[in-house]
Image 1 (cartoon, rainbow, N blue to C red):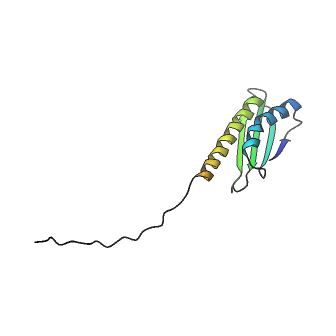
Image 2 (image 1 turned 135 degrees about the vertical axis):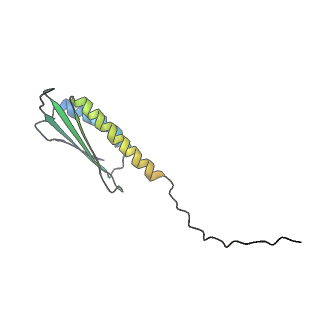
Length: 121
């Protein structure tokens, strides 16, 4: 799996990068090699908490038409990463379950004509 971390506003500290790598380890074990994960981190300054983080996960899976895209806003970096990771995990599990289901549509059987029996006398 290819894994890329992008800081969309300013530099990202090494501690935060390590935390991201640690959290994404679960995905690496369960995804194929051809998948590509990009994580974007953006820091906003707000009036209420003075600081807010936006974490964006963009996961491209082989054999899936649309990529998984998750965007989360939180006051703390750890909470934002945790919520985004949970959402991505749920999406990946849902896609895996859909793919592993046995889908087989039975062919339609033409209706047989009704046979009426006469009562024996």
